[in-house]
Length: 225
Ligand code: CA
Image 1 (spheres, helix red, strand yellow):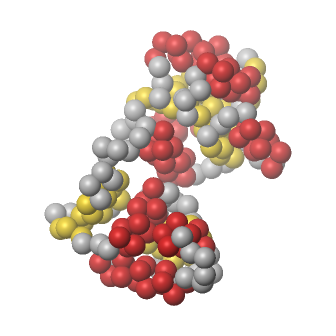
Image 2 (image 1 turned 45 degrees about the vertical axis):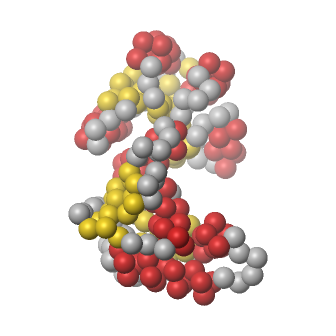
């Protein structure tokens, strides 16, 4: 997948470029609006990482151009402008995601991957995290070579978590998605989550106490879960 990185900070740009290249992405890195415009036509990137403070203009004008001319092209804004108003402004202008500097590269990678999955259809794709693989079209779940036999509810929980890795999903969100709950289903969630974890083993679903659950793409040293 081809990513256009628009960032004038040399250290940050280089760090991001190396991190993405390591993950198998093809990265085209430019430092100016004008070069970005040229590369958008010349290289047809599939995802854009956009810094807003550029030497030859504001990235927001480029954002506006992208939304007029390249509606479906996913954009993540990378910027030091972190107030709520800035974020809303960026998202309202059509950015798909917004990351405030300084950020850690692991988070950027996770968001790029999540956006890539959302944007490019995952019909033929298996999602894989540390040997656990879920093949969306066939709903087949494996760990290494081993087939994991899940009930419909267990599968639904796993699929929801895997499609939103690195985001903590609340109990309520999971209950509504999986059980369409009108009443208090918290016991059902506990039961199905317990069964799912028993079948896939420890180390995938992390409990965030009092909030919900998350599957981390980069394992977190855990004191719980
Ligand atoms: Ca900048």
